[in-house]
Image 1 (cartoon, rainbow, N blue to C red):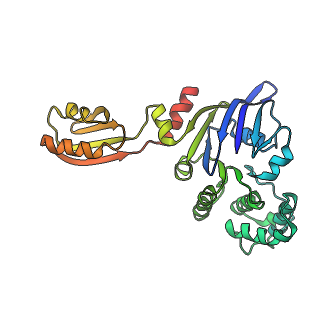
Image 2 (spheres, helix red, strand yellow; image 1 turned 180 degrees about the horizontal axis):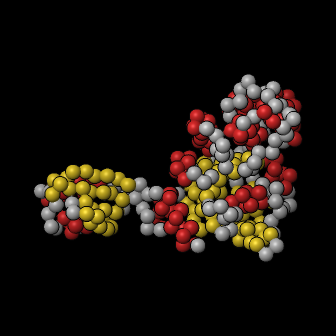
Image 3 (cartoon, rainbow, N blue to C red; image 1 turned 30 degrees about the horizontal axis):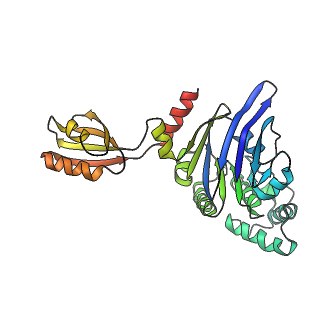
Length: 305
């Protein structure tokens, strides 16, 4: 869906995006992360043809963004950070207008507008003026306009911004459903949202990609992988060496008396439990700690900074 090489954007002497390479295919949801000013929005604008690149190339949905920007725009659903709404139009009028300029067949427009309104929770709002909507509902309309042409690629810049908790649940559920049948690139600052929704993460800082892959893969690359906490009510002196000798265990760290951090390849918990039982020690708890995206984010951004 997206192939970018050397994507660069300069504003006078400021390099906002610096030789970015991207390969994104679908279906699935890809989280596009980075601190404020990292270059996320600028990259999204270049990929959708709304902002010209200074250098590099980008192929989106089989078309060169520089040579065929209209072909790209016709095939991509884009929700910018601030949805492009006309306050004097009603919800129905605006979505019908977007369907027309996106090339939706005239015979399908009314039905398609109705479908996307139901998808994003706007059923019954077709006669409401856009200018009268709250920020959360403006976000829903923005998502509806991105969906109206039924694109195979969705690029969403902060799609849950301004939504209340009930709306968040609905929109996140919709994004998961959309990711089953198309590619969704999602920019957000909410790390738990990325962990919940995304199959893969692309992390950008100072205009450069500093990490790409699954959360576990990235965590392993910065030494923040998943680990097993072993807590014993009584621990023989040789417990660390016994744990270290288990097949698949790569490291053992004593966190406190009777409490150990065990890292390993695959699921070592059953073998750890058997080892403890065989040693005569009293096992109090085994707790699995999943890799944290926050740890990955801070490690990679900190290293880049």
